[in-house]
Every structure is written in C-alpha cells, then in structure tokens.
Length: 341
Image 1 (cartoon, rainbow, N blue to C red):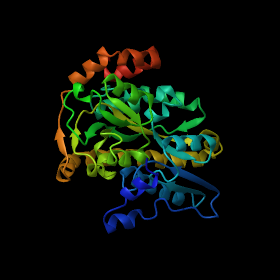
Image 2: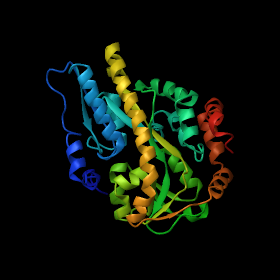
Image 3: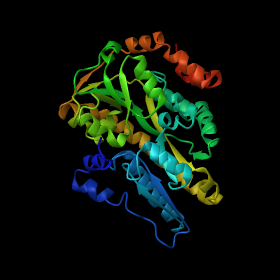
Image 4: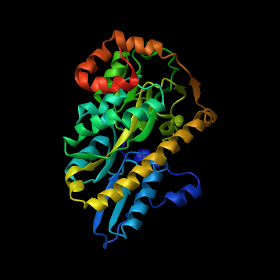
C-alpha cells in the first residue's frame, strides 16, 4: 500500500500558466494580524475546479473582511485521508472540510441517501433535491453531530466504472470483480449486491492500488478520472452513471458558532458563490472530458442500466436501504427520484 504522497506527485500541475495561478494553494495565506484564522482541507487534486474556486473565495473573504479573516487551504490529502480529516474537523484541528455524503455516512447515516443507485436521472433532478427539501433534511441530521454544513453542496458528479481488464456492459460483468470503493457502507453494499468484491480504500491510495493490481478497477466522475491521471492505470470507462455524488462543505460546529454573525454571513456568501461557480465548471468540463480521455487511450462503452437496477432489486439492495434510511427520508428522496424498487 502506498504512502499518501503518491497521489500528490501524480496530481502535479501541468502547464506553467496553471502552475503560476495555483502555486499558492496549500501554502499559508494568513498573517499574524488576522483576527480569525482557519484551516480548509480537502482530498481533491490542486487543479480541480473545487480548489480553484475555493482559492478565489478565500481571497475574496480576506479582502472584504479587511484582513480579519484568513483561511489556509490544504488540498490533495495533505492533512490525511478522508476518514482522518473527518476526525480532525470534528476535533477542531481542521475548520472546513468538503466531504462526500457517502463517506460522511459513517458518522451521519442519512448523509449517504443521495448515493442510492440510479436515484437521479439528470442534474435538474439532483439540484432540485439537494438544494431543496432533501438537502435540508440531510443538513438537519448533520447538525446533530455538531457539524455545520453550508446550504449548497459541491458537485462531484455522476460516477462511472473504470477497469484495467474489460468493459463492464452488464451487471453480470461485475461478478467477482475486484473494485476500489470509498470507505462507505452504501458503496460496499451496492457492489456486493452486484456480486463484485469491493475494497474500501481512501482516495489518497487509489492510484497505487490500481497500479499494483490490488484492485482491477474503481469508479469516479470523469473529472476525477482525468485530473488524478487514472487513465495511466486504467483502460476502459463504462458509463454506468450509477450514482450521483457531491461534497457537503462541513465546518467544526463549535468553531463556527464562535464566529461573529457578520463574518459568518461573509464566509457563507463567498462559499456559496464558489459552489455555484464550481457546479458550472464541472458541467463545462464534463462536456469535453470524454474526447480528452479517449485521446489519452481510454475506451468508452455505454451500458444499458436496466440489468444493474434489476440486479440490485433482486438482491434486496433497495429494500435494505429503505429500512436503514427510514420511510420519511425515502419519501423525501422519492419525491424527486420517483419510486425506487
């Protein structure tokens, strides 16, 4: 198993213009004169739109607060893997941390509900749910564990399966398949229902796990596949779109409660603006990524999702998670997704 510095090397910026624009991300940006200093950490490569937009937000917050608020950004797992950083934001060692709801599910079970397989057919449905009643219901659950979550969730995208050995055309192709999944009960449950052999691995170790054949494949949005250079260790992209995933921006509840109301409003304004711009960035990025990844040697296929949904239904996947999430939560999801078998 690799050390966490491997993805950092694999995520080095290409192009001097990009390097110049982003060179200060991850470097301390706060001065001793600041009245409030914060740490913002994430698991995302430095060139990802999420980091570009958060850097803009950090600078705008500093400017509009007249230097009173300074935020230091640590991208690309610099402060640990997802589970480590979640512990740190709870303890107060980290102040802000964007995290997939499906990983947050280990602490807040309801947070994984948006990841139920094939729940969302398109982005219009995603944003109606996550900016609406379903998202508010999830945030209320997050607040119960003393974490503050901002109203708008970052877009991580619809997830697709990549492999080094074969295309995945039907659910049967996943029988016995060794696939990396994030450390999340829902992901593990879903791929076990397909008959696969899922292994929970933090993103900081994904490249090495694929390179050394610990696993044969993984699943992620196209933007992550490209930016993390997974095309170097994977051959096939199967466009399953099996779930949509986003990142809630979490704050340590005690620290956030101690921030004056006017500074809370300022931070929230710029964080929300960054999220909305990031969503648009991902949309535009996705429009060209398939062609780019094909040019880098990846082969795409487009499965019919019916075999996947039927397999999950027969395996009792939806019934199991209906029981875990509860009827009230499922009703809020199905208001947008329609009835899930």
